[in-house]
Image (tube, rainbow, N blue to C red; front, side, top):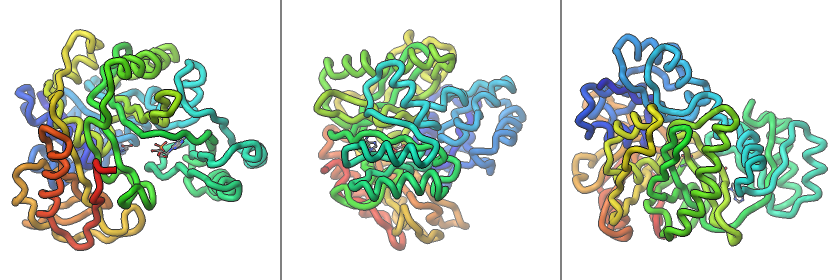
Length: 417
Ligand code: AMP
Ligand code: GLY
């Protein structure tokens, strides 16, 4: 099979790594890819959001399966465009990807189908939003409706902060089109947990749980980022907990999407908060998380091609998805100093070849002659798999210490907070 992965970050490197183990693959392509992915796949310089060029390439190369990994091309309808051209594509349709691309769509869906989530209201104009705020308890959560790279969420501690956030989004254009509508929702408390799941429109198969560390600095301080590190499993859940989530969240979500005429096929991301009154949905994403994929995929035993085919053929209920149940994984992200704000790139990365026990997934890297250099905010993800979480964390940090680049920044407490 010829397989094309769309994207070029750490998540796509983990997907390429997993695909590369499948005996079913003859040729693996990635667009645009990065310096690490280039060791496993032929990288093609097509932007992940360039629908026309991607379809043309897939047709020209006789691609049998396209895996669309990032949110933007999914929201733009890349899967629909590929399917129209007769190419099998893994990922939700444009209509189904709204579950991530529009927070108000997701919230309205949850309300209509009684899926547990924070109470909320949606506004498109300033005055009603401001008067609603006056009736809210603090802290209060303000979210831009559209895709905002994980930065469109403000947790306001004071009325003034809340008003400012609403003004910035609705008036100030701080988030462009993504902020032309805001969701104001009540503040929930409890540990956060990510559960990714494969879904074929009807059946939903949860993966091993994981936990992201979104803040830039240790002890969950500093700004939100795309993710500074992950562990899997993310919590120890009893059979009963898992069944409860299946019955109240996972299956109802998949059923709701089908009932709305936009069945969800692909990987769905349930961002959950385990509140004192039970698990609630904080957010949905329409794809693998990054860096969640970097800890979940190394624990997956089943061939990813087999799973993708079962999803596309709507027979997920007929296969067994197996995990390394007794093992744990930890991924530590090495970022450019300054991320998620401004940072410099082009710094040579050394020590990569000295890492033998962990997997090093490249995110923002570029090949320059014989040298691999930094090329983004999140640069690398170092993933260790071991018999216990403690051992995985220790191994990941031992290997992180072998890698160097100018102004490297990473959290020292992944899996420890
Ligand atoms: P999101 O982009 O929706 O995942 O939000 C980013 C982060 O904001 C989440 O990981 C949570 O830590 C926090 N957050 C979002 N919504 C809420 C909420 N209703 N209550 C408390 N924290 C929240
Ligand atoms: N790690 C969070 C996300 O992928 O959205």
